[in-house]
Image (cartoon, rainbow, N blue to C red; front, side, top):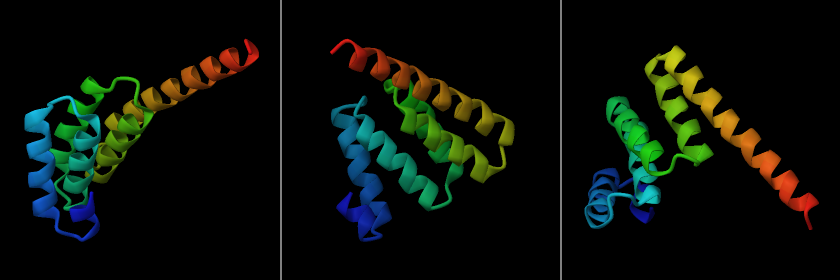
Length: 105
């Protein structure tokens, strides 16, 4: 993340890829890699990694939201809306679960 913050994007990408070689399911590295690609306007790559992130972390609302943004930036509005709806559904489920769990205390 430090490399990204310093705008050393190619080095950041290499670091994320090394982390993913060690742990292909490392969701933070996948998210950071997707965001770095999006920052570089490499939207096809960002979308590909965003899809992998959702496979690895299917309950991560932020993963869906990020993928929706990548689709929007690419002009793929139908896909963006579909993924955004999935993010909202996850958010509602989490809110219901939180409400239920707080009522049990």
